Image (tube, rainbow, N blue to C red; front, side, top):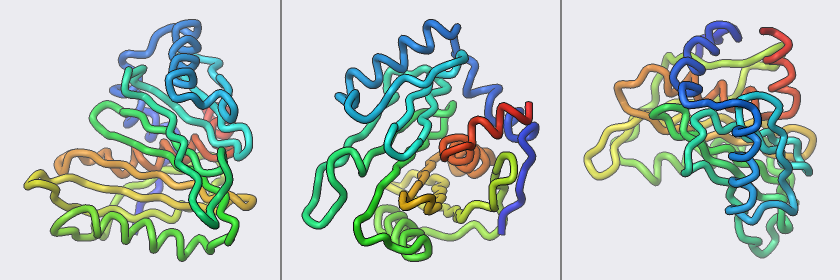
Length: 215
């Protein structure tokens, strides 16, 4: 079970460290342009930056990718087309560092229109297959903004090559698209769950507007 945090608490937990390296709006727009260019994503993503937070938007789905650390590792991912899978540009993602927490956002329009429950179970299965000694975290903090429903989220401890970590997954189906977040942070970092769910909350359609309206 998760405990929902308000926007003010979310921002105090997330922004202090994650935006420590943020620059002015012009520099933020330049960073967003660079991410689009080096990812070869200009056919589907546009620069959506209006503040010191670099942002790019996936036009078909409305996914808003946020790059708070202004890090050269920030990326847009265009996944290859698979048989019976989505066409080009309809299975994409972005990845960013929120201080020491790595968050990936993925949005996909599956032709099969899988249920949210099945997709969530599949995402949890991915964590169990990729990590060792995986154990669910029964109680954790999660985030939402505005009047968003509570996210479908789960958190786990696990190990890879002997290194412990916390893994978080969030999934929602919205208007034919599946939005998913994956966050990985130190096993000792209590903010991994709230940062990952907050990153998800402001990335899905309407999330950023709801968040900024509440500030």
